[in-house]
Length: 166
Image 1 (cartoon, rainbow, N blue to C red):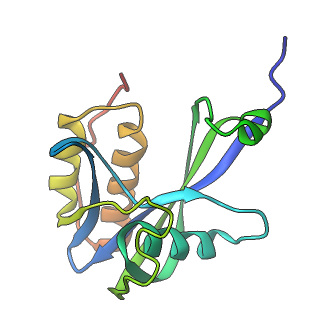
Image 2 (image 1 turned 135 degrees about the vertical axis):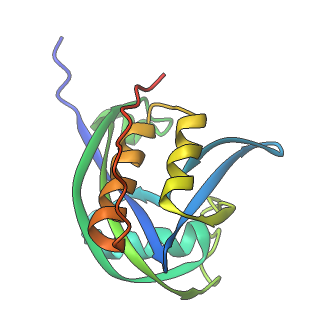
Image 3 (image 1 turned 30 degrees about the vertical axis):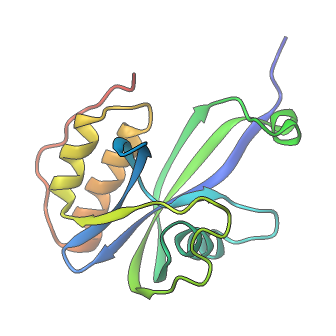
């Protein structure tokens, strides 16, 4: 039987501050399970830019500006816990964006119980951390880091490592 469900549009954003990017940590207790970037579903009627600003405020308490799409999209099959989403979607489509750090603004931080601890790292450090925790999402993240670093930060990363998800 053919699956006619689509992919839920989601944003994923790399926030730039100087020569560093914001990297979120997903924890399992006190141990780092993997790394990610702020992001989430694009709600109906919401623009990509509005979604990026909302997710950055909710997940890391950071206000961003100058949001740009990177031209990278990745689809991942997954099962949704919410039945209404499971009926509509077979997975997610990450739309990668980059934005500039403006300031800390904690008023929406964690309002959806999705607050994430984060750190500022160089693009090279971020790639090394993703390679260490290689997951299904690592390739999209590494591609986005390279594109952001080379096209938006003036930091040329010369070697691109291919990652295969587990």
